[in-house]
Every structure is written in C-alpha cells, then in structure tokens.
Length: 330
Ligand code: NAI
Image (cartoon, rainbow, N blue to C red; front, side, top):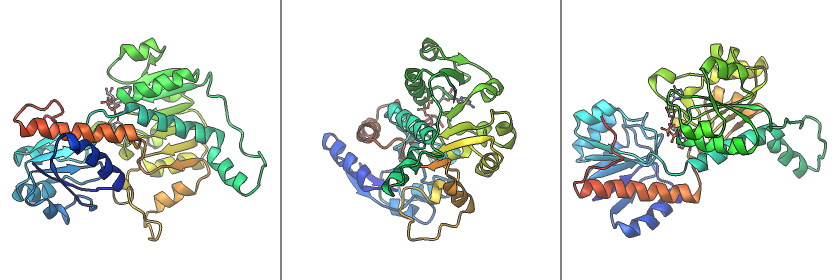
C-alpha cells in the first residue's frame, strides 16, 4: 500500500519510520498541509495520512478520489476537519487513532495550569535577567480549589486523576457519567453550576456543531471573577475575541491555550520571520496571564509511537480486507 503523508514533520517521520519496520508500507512524506492546492500530490497513492489541520473538505476529497486515493488515515483522534458526507459519496474509508496517550494531553493541561498559576513563565524570564523580585508572582494553592472539567472521556479522566492527586474538588459536565470519575469523588453537574463554582475550567470535549464557541461572552459572564481557563481540546470551543474581552474586564484571570480557532494556517510551522496577520493572536500572546502553546499537548515519545503504530495497524487491517475497529462511521 502506498501512503502519502501530509503536514509531515521530522519528529513524526521518525516515529513512523520506526513503527513501519513491523509493516513495511511504502511511505512518502510531504511537508505541505493538505488543502485544495496541494491535494494533487496525493495522486497515485492508495491512502493519505493527515493530521489535525489538514483540510479534508469536499474539494480536497474529490481531487484525492480522482487521483485514486481510497483511504484517509487520520493520525489524530478528532475528525472535525473532514467532510464525512463528501468522503462517503466518494467511497472513501476513514480511519483514525481514537486514543494514543490521554496522559500526554492531561499532563500538558496541568502543566499549563501550574505554569499560569505560579507564573513560572514570568519567573523564567526574570531570573535569566537576574531579577529576583517576587512582586506579581503570587499564586494560589490548587489544593482545595474547584476544577471544572467539561468532557470527561479519556483525556478528561486522565486530567481528573492528576487534579485529584493535587487535592482539588472535582466537578464534571458530560452527558455520559463514568464510574471512574465518580470513584475520584467527582460530581456531575450542569454547565451552569460548573461555571458558577469552578476556579479552574478545562475543556476536554470534542468540537461538534452544538459546542462551537461553548465559551463566549454570555458563558464567561456566568463564571467566577478571575477564573482560569484551559483549552487543550479544539480552538473552536472558545470564542477568542470574547476571551480577550473577558481578560480585559477581569472575568478571566488566566488563560492557557494549546489550540486556537485560527491555528490552521499558523501552527506546526516556523513563522518567526513572517508577519502574522492575525490581530487576535497578537493580542492574546501579549497578555502576561495568557500562555499559548502550538497544539503540542500530544507531543511525547510515547504518544508519537502509539500514533504511528495504530495508524499503520489501521491501514494493515484495511489492506487485509478486515473491518477496522477505528473506522469512522460515515
Ligand atoms: P473522548 O471521546 O474519549 O471524550 C470526549 C468526552 O466529551 C466524552 O465523554 C463525551 O461524552 C464528552 N462530550 C461530548 N460533547 C460534550 C459537550 N458538549 N459537553 C460536555 N462533554 C461532552 O475524547 P478524548 O480522547 O478525551 O479527546 C477529547 C478531545 O481532545 C478530542 O476531541 C480532541 O479535540 C482533543 N485532543 C487534543 C489534543 C492536543 O494535542 N491538544 C490531542 C488529542 C485530542
């Protein structure tokens, strides 16, 4: 099977190189993001392997289908970037990696919380400049504070386990109640109650039509003054302009984003020598109480190895004509 990788990066290629020793597929790597202008690169391949910011809209899918591609292998969990109906009509099979390392994302999430709370990003800069003043670095004990987790699936649960270890009170909003969360002492509550009571709110639900801009001007208004917000899920869950307003009026005291709604053309590339034409991004990155990371919550050796193995295993099952368990129902 010939597989074309889009949005390829060295750390990812290395993981696939190692995993492919057990599969022996024919792998070709393209740095380019998959979009209408680059989709013809897929011509002559059996499958394309795509990541979170590759654009699999109807136009791209039609170009790929004309070029002979029959399978879209997502090397990620989310599939909000794929037009499922267009893929179904084109007769394409889509497989994904539903779980590779929930702990990797959860650990990054809590890393953002602790960094923001204890101002570690500011202290790092100060001590490099021999500025040992502690003014403005006062944090709060996580112990005894209330965490609100929106979406307690695999990553939300892994986050709950860590926060339980920190001694936080745990609130969860999720339509599905999980015994594992209850065993940690978490209480399932309405979104309104979670907004009212949480000191720290972390998003771990998928981006679906009905939760687009879940955090917006009206939901920020329901939260505690100075609340900390962390989003390591998908950028579209937070209205970034409204978040800026909520920072300006003191409603949001700290914001940690690993995902950003306009990340598609920014993240995973070095833009340091370019003019980034995105005022919202510039505003957000200028605040001392905002930390942005470039969709790296998943980025551990263990997660990369698991992504590579599962992706190639998915393709092997399809190549053998088996029904792949990680196939997305279209
Ligand atoms: P999962 O499918 O195991 O859990 C998602 C949970 O969200 C489920 O329990 C579901 O019932 C719940 N949910 C769905 N809609 C909801 C809503 N409107 N309100 C509250 N809960 C809702 O997914 P998993 O593996 O935990 O991943 C969560 C998200 O994390 C993914 O959708 C993806 O967007 C993101 N992600 C981010 C990564 C990163 O590197 N930043 C890496 C991997 C995933």
